[in-house]
Length: 88
Image (cartoon, rainbow, N blue to C red; front, side):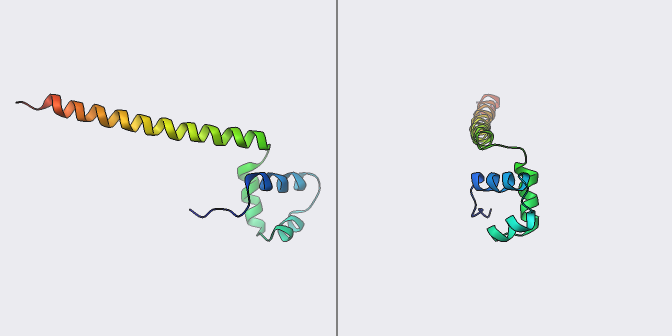
């Protein structure tokens, strides 16, 4: 997956400037991005503050860890069932 050359805080700052009255064309020209990119950012990050974004990243990381833990437990359970079901 391609990484953005802009950080989330820079993206949110650009969105705040747009809410403050600057046009999308001005901001896009200044940042060197397409207007479509700006609208995608607004769809994804619209209404967020930097603190909200930080909390979102923390929750995504926690969710990723929990999914990995669940997958490990499910695999161990499946292996235990296989061992128990075999007749010696």
